[in-house]
Length: 198
Image (cartoon, rainbow, N blue to C red; front, side, top):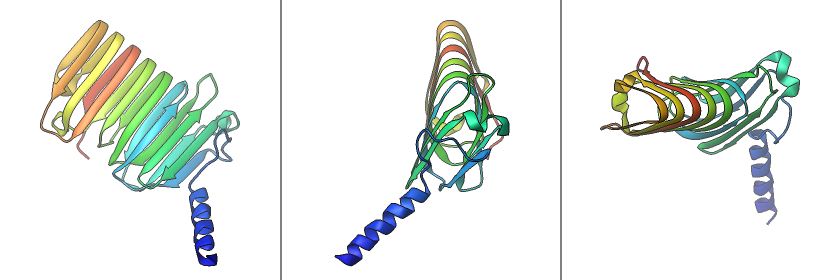
């Protein structure tokens, strides 16, 4: 029984290493947790400008403006092959860059601002209430289903040779790839462009 208790305690301590408490201000201009490729990352983002960039490293790394650190509330949790990121920054001119493994599934929700997703292969579900969304896709042929909508604004999708402007614009495409792309903007612009293959 004593051995079981010690194992449970060790597990609790191990999990605590990978968890940043909710509503806590980062102690430096960066946050980092180990995270293996091919996992799922959920991101809840406040108003601001964000870049989500894939790298060859097995970690999630958040880079902040040092002058804004005291005004940021952040949460970064890792549980096996799933991770949760929440960022809430100051109302004016908040910017952050979030580095993730190149091979990752993303679920992203942002209220207002600009979002750019670069060099990330995997399923993507992205919602932006108001602003500009740009997603670089390694190749259109990598996707089996694409569902992109903008209620008011424009969709530019060179990867699928499509462009739509106005009200209730949408793009649906199907292929032989293995990934799904769902992207939605309430008011603003969306760009889906082919980038260099990883």
